Image (cartoon, rainbow over all chains, first blue to last red; front, side):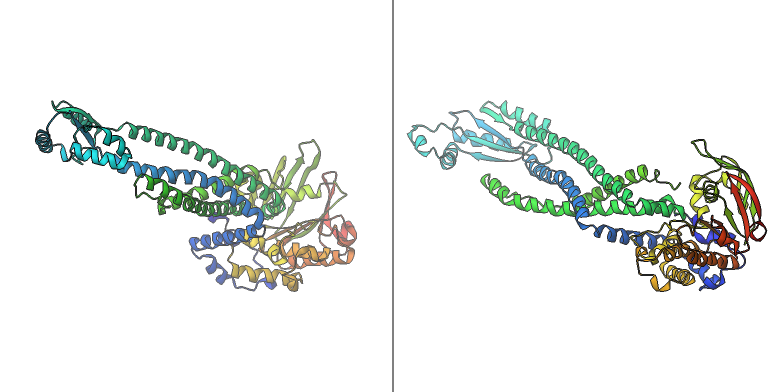
Amino acid sequence: MNSKSRPHVYRSRTTPKRKIADMDVETEPRVRSRQQKSKLSRLVYMHSWVAVSTLGLLSRTPFSSLLTAAVIAIALSLPVGLYVLLDNVRGLVSNWDNTHQISVYLKLGINEEDALKLAKRIQSWQEVDRIEFISADQALLEFRKNSGFGAAIDALQKNPLPMVIIVQPQASITEITRIEKLEKRLSNIRQVDLAQLDMEWLSRLNAIIDLGERALLLLTSLLGVAILLVVGNTIRLTIFNRREEILVSKLIGATNRFIRRPFLYCGFWYGLSGAVFAWILVEILLALLSGPVKTLVGLYGSQFHISSLDLQIIGSIMALGIGLGLLGSWLAVGRHLRAIEPS
Amino acid sequence: MIKFVNVSKRYSGGKVALNDVSFHLAPGDMAFITGHSGAGKSSLLKLVPLIERSTRGEVLVDGTNLSCISRRHIPRLRRKFGLVFQDYNLLHDRTVYDNVALPLMISGMHYSETGRRVRAALDKVGLLDKERVYPITLSGGEQQRVGIARAVVNRPPVLLADEPTGNLDPELSKEIMELFHEFNQVGVTVLVATHDLDLIAKMNHRLLVLNDGRLMADGMTRDLL
């Protein structure tokens, strides 16, 4: 409601000199001082009044209100749940990103003393952080322990495994090209059979996550449109049900803004309640998934656990829900309110 | 206060509702508009709060030409009027209090002030004890008095009533008309459209007689009836 349409503005110009004395229980100066109260407090009062009264209105039809909120909640929780999962996987991968180890397999037939000298030489390189030397015997021991082929290995007369130097590049080296350069330098050493930087699976996984994120974006947009339609349709029905009230209000001087306000608040409440339900729903889903995930990553010897929703994500859910609720009702109100005019 | 200058109203179907109507209602005046049904009484009343716009001529309210008022400023214009309807136009899912408070809420009045105003208006129409009931439980006469309380609660300078007694028996009609008369006595400009000649014959006010959209007579009831 703009300041021009405040009652005191026109009253001060047009009130007849003879007042409606017997109706008047308030003296004029007091009225005026009350009406001169700051614009802000009046606006706050009006908005809080409409907010509370629309909440009351929605609670009068709890079933249909909850139904709308539930539809919004499900539509919101789907992309949010996916986002959280992707985010977790992304976090997991980024941990691995920092461990660009290069396994250097030495040629067979090199004695251990030369191998240790070589290891020491590699250790002294600038781009190398540290190395780990695994002798052929050690490698065999480890293989026997982890693979379960103990008996088969016993049948071998000779240790078939090469010595391995695991090279950990400096943490400051993050560009893949520099690591690949190091890999090349290592494989050029005479005694080295193969230097291997196994990054391919990581890039594939990253590509899959990128694809997932793109799919998530599309899914979110689609479900966002669905929420707009649900809220818009609900508000359209509300407008239709309150047609009489809108007509009467227009007849007695309600601005479009005044008439629009309760419908916008309806959209706001739908969006907010939908977002809160979505939040709860996603937390439940994550809680249900955390057990199986723990078992799965346990098999890989990892301590990884699904992180729950942080404040930023919760804030985003709320903003998304409220935003879509408001926008949906705004669209419906803009379309249908104009059509209701007294005649 | 309300001035019509050669006003004509033709609806899109081609029907001429008003034809070259001119009159002036000064501030504090009270007048009846009468005529057979379809004579243009309702059309004339609709032009004042811009429920309809005239096709020719000028309607002036408080010196403002209504053709200069844009759609956006119509609400501000309408708050100058208290409108009373034949079918009351009350909201049946709200109490009497909330119905009467509606114009005050629209103008953004604080609730403490609202309570005082609503009760003063209800007291004036004699329904102070009915503020908590729903309109559906009231008789026709009482519902119309709620309608009048809603029309006057914002203390508008002008009251416009379209067949306010159309659905009421003679006794109740008389009470309603007396209410309008009382508001006029304290300075409110009143314009009432009615076809109840028996009723207005007893009150001496100005009378505008419409016939087929033309203003046939303009004088005091005492002289015309």
